[in-house]
Amino acid sequence: MSKVIVVASGKGGTGKTTVTTSLALALSRKQNKVLVVDCDSGMRGTDMMLGITDRLVHDVSDIIAGTCDFDDALYECPGAKGLYTIAAPISAEDEVSPQVMKQFIEEHKNDFDYVLVDAPAGLGTGFEAAAVAADRALIVVNTEPISVRGGINIREKLTEMGIEDQRLVINRFDKERFISTKLYEDLDEIIDTVGVRLIALILEDVRIPALAQRGALATNWSSSGVVFDSLVERINGNDVALSVKL
Image (cartoon, rainbow, N blue to C red; front, side, top):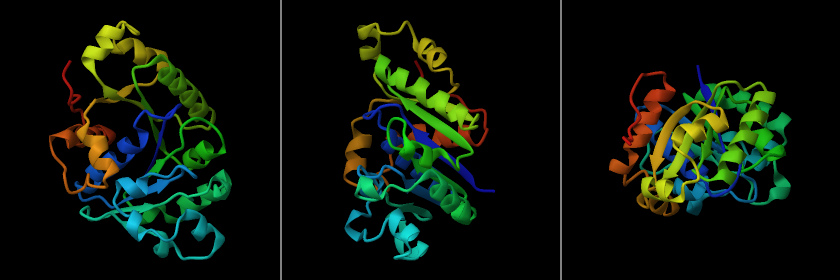
């Protein structure tokens, strides 16, 4: 049975799209067929990170409008067998409604092992469209109060939508900066504040966003990807330790 996971954050800049694409790559490396649906209309980024921008002609709004077939807007990521993406509209005016997106994902999800939906930052109809068909959610935060507060808002909205299976991803973690800023006593305070169980702690690593921005993650998977391999195991319910030791 296909698993639909929305990846969300309460504010921009948390690295949510990088988490989405890196997780998708890790899943595909385990011989899963994976679809990434970009719901960030007007600010799409998964096409760039998955290396399909130069080939991109159609997006999800074209499928909905009937100007192309599903397969015409489905792009396979180079260097990652079984990983596909559908781009968000380049214009925010072409944003797909929650009702239509739910029907769209329900219609196509069983052709894939996993569907990852990259939500726009914050709340609104774009977020609702991204989350409406999800079975579970990953909430991405950084160790900053504004980001943590955004995580609380996302958790509350997901709960309101009936999505109870939520997990927290703390991204771009820098231990020295975390200690020196003294914004939180420890990571447990962040976890307790957001109110969601931690599933991954991802260290600040300039290689990951640099490779992602060049669309080169798939062909340069290295030690920086180990944390996402661990995240896959934990998503699948396997009792593995967090790959980051503090």
